Amino acid sequence: MPSIGPVAPSERIEVIDILRGWAIFGILLVNMTHDLPWEYLISRQWTGTADRIVYHMVDIFAKEKFYTLFSFLFGLGFSLQMGRAATRGASFLPVYSRRLLGLYLIGLIQILLVGDGQLRIYALLGFLLLLLRRCSDRIILVLVFLCLLILPVRYAVTSGIRELRLANPQTAREVVREEAQEAVEERQWEQEDTRVHSSGSFGEIIAWHAPRILRPHLSFPWVATWWWLGMEFPLLLLGLYAGRRRIFLNLPAHLPLMRKVMWWGLGLGLLGSFIPHFVDQLRDAALPYPTHQLTLLLWAFGAPALCFFYAAAIVLLAQRDSWRRRLAPLAAVGRLALSNYILHWLVAMFLFYSYGLGLYAKFGPLVGLGLTLLIFPLEVVLSMWWVKRFRFGPAEWLWRTLTYGKFQPMRLQHA
Image (cartoon, one colour):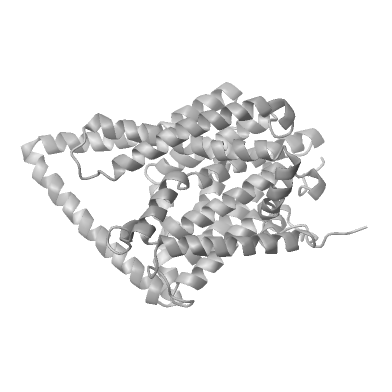
């Protein structure tokens, strides 16, 4: 039986690589301005106007928008590879299972080095996607809708139970005591997290990250997967659906759809991003229970909607020759998406951890924005230089070698 091989450069769809490059930029932006220690220091340490403006703008326009785009592209790539295998009469399941196992192993290294398990999450959800690959389009879309409801329903139940306990004088004091204790423990964790990363040894940092390898498995599937299934997985399913519809294989026929997605995504995305953010800033106000639940529902659909606005707008711009030339450098970044993502780890380790410059928690979101605007252009230049000489990025080469069980040729063969 024929086997699946790596995608040749001539078979790549440029606009998908451009979208991957755009997602890589967004992930770097969020990591540098929002996801490190700023989320719990913004109200205590970085109180300047510029830092707060950057933080809130990123929270509204970028947070949860670029990882969701990356999830959609992961599902889309899954669907396209499955289609290629079917066309060639090749076996898809064994090769893709090895591919996911390779990604899982890289994800374990990611957890140990930087404490983030995003790649491991994609590997686990990829196996779930394999189980659903033969479901009909209607079932896929129903699952997308149900998954998007997971987080709002879960928060509605947990906050509803809290409201009932607060309304009962016998349990109200217990709730206040539990939340006060949780606040103390959270503050202690934040202090230790800052200490370990800014002044701890390499061994201490690895030891601090190591428990995160086991924790999701110990709680699987009841706790750790709520966020994955409610945020990342529906986008993987939509990527699978888009691949089946051959939207990116025949873009000219689907441009009217892209325009609808762009405008609906903009409207729903802004509504579902501004209102929840504004309400979140009033967390100490006595807002009615239904108000909180409505904002969570808006957020669950608003974040993916804004993600699709960005994607559809880029696709439409890329149909024009002038804009395609401007966006082409992003395609180089997208072709090396995994290598560039890992490069972000290395930069973060050098900048923030004690065995590098030790800048963890020592500057705010404004400086993080400046670093993003400095690092990403260098990343673009490096990626463009690399793709002219090599078939894969270093991480992609390792991933494909693990997948196919043999060393892959790296250098391009020019005629």
